[in-house]
Length: 251
Length: 188
Image (cartoon, rainbow over all chains, first blue to last red; front, side, top):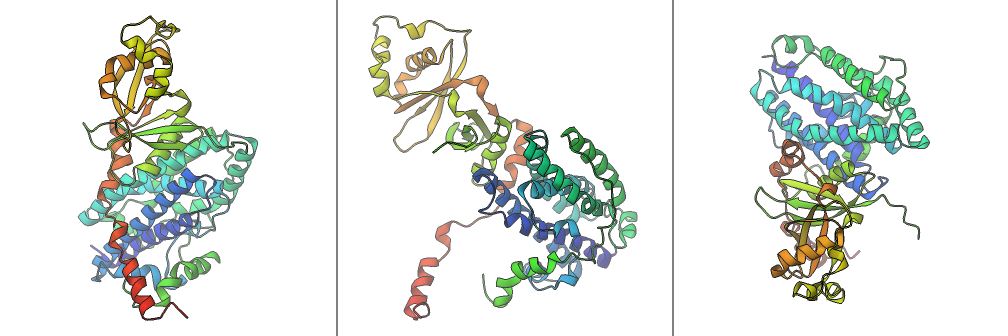
């Protein structure tokens, strides 16, 4: 098993989760209705918890301390060391935007976790199965809103369509294989991103069209996990500020 | 002020299989399916739940013993004249009966009755479950309830079981603040 490559792969997954979790947490106290505020706060906590699980696996693969290393990865790396997709870096926009991003990501993650739960690496399969239980619920929540907004009022439809127009090019990044993924796929450790994307594209495309949304032309230009948006540095400044203020603090 | 909220739904929760179904609070939602999701997020992240129900708040017919007495339902139960309420007004259907059994407790499930109207369901409930002497009676049509299904239980409720969390009392905030104050660090 190529531990170096697998650690890189899982780091990218953890970074996706961490940044999404942080973005979702920014809604806390600002969501349009109390119940959604609580739901989003729950989701944010879950995503950050998933990032921690992936980072712990990275720690084990790299021979680091699984208790301390996740904090190191989250709070003491610079932007150019992160491997998150641009999709997860974008600012929240309006609620339709955040919700649609959540749906697009949740639907993809459901596919990926199903594959990862069959990984030859037992620790990975186990973590994926655990995360999957929570993700299925996220997907149910974000999915439930799509037809309600898409087929709701003129305003809700317009906002969701605008969100889709903005997000769709970035969502194509979900289909870009991770660095040196082939060797991991070959070894039965992870599923092939391209296959997951095909299944995702079919499912999501149909569901969005049923909600009266028009899929924009695909633009595959936003899948590079090393070409960050200008928003990442700002997100990290905010997220890492307290931890960096006193790196030795005991929590 | 104009109420621009979504409709309100009552939330019930059973902590474990076989445990009593208890009223837990309410949520606002655009429809009953979203109400069930909102109920899970608001009430079942912690502590545990095995089953959840939601039902539209406006489907509830409620009476206190005082109100019942005023309406003399209790008197009729003791053998006086038949009331109009006992005359079925529509096709009989099943109603759930809930009662608040202690001043601080939640409304708990008492049983089912079949009746043709909310008021006759209330009368039947008082007849069948009057021995419980609740402080508050609720009846509502069983068909109004959306409950979580057994196959939903895993994604809805299992994550809460695996989560560890600290009670507020485990954080020594008060002690810590006192220490800081005594060192004069917060008084500048």
